[in-house]
Amino acid sequence: MELLVCDLDGTLVGPMDQGLETAKRAIDYCREKGIEVTIATGRAFGAAERYLEYFEIDQPAITNGGALVAAIGKPPIYEKQIKRDIALSIAEELRTLGYPFYFLVGKDMYTETKGPETEKYSHLLQFPIKILDSIEQVEKCPTQIAVRVPPQDADALLSHLDSKWAEVTLLKSLPHLLEIQPLGVSKAKGLEFLACYMGIPRENVFTIGDGLNDLDMLMWSGMKAAVANAHAAVKQTVPYVSTAPYSEGVMEIVEKFIR
Image 1 (cartoon, one colour):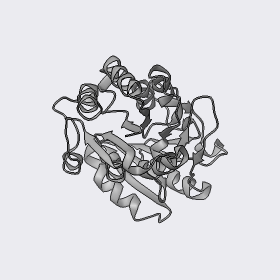
Image 2 (image 1 turned 120 degrees about the vertical axis):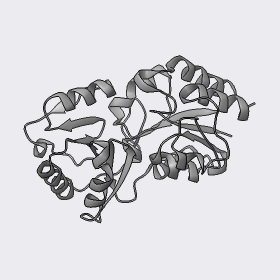
Image 3 (image 1 turned 135 degrees about the vertical axis):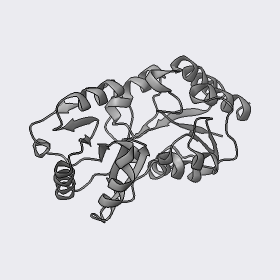
Image 4 (image 1 turned 180 degrees about the vertical axis):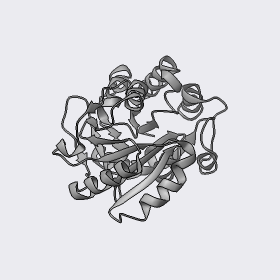
């Protein structure tokens, strides 16, 4: 094993940053064994940056749902974007339907949704979301569009949007969160690029995750595991599931498989 890649929210970190110290110990344990460590997350790079700093991760991280791979203080080494006309068409549809949406552009997040929903989302991410009068003010193309949605509406909205644009991929990463990405973008594609960039074969890559948006990454890597709180579909695809959730589960996994 040469590289460990962990999902962030729900894997390394629990609700409200639960288990940060344990996650740091797990990462340090891997480093002591000579293994490189990074994260793969649906968060915008900027919203993941404080974790990279806390964990002292200097390798490029896979962020924006796999559309951006970059290290702290350096330009991206990999970036995929949604074409501007498609992004604005999606924004208009979501605006009409009344769902709050957020453009992930480079290392930042933008929205035209004012009020408590965006304040809540920003607080949850512990990252400032830039509020504009219109999303059309964003000149660059987004790498991802995140949509906050009531859980009971998520599947119907996913189906509705999926039928409209062939140029993007849609997935439900959480019961209340949809992610819209450029066609072909995923954590697995970002990881494939990163592993090649680092000169590490897939059989020497170990991934740990919990959510549906981790499935392709888990299936791509040579070694894989899930934490106890993982989605049932994720548990069915990995050879080992920890008995503990979140970072305690990550610690359990690395101590079991990394000697």
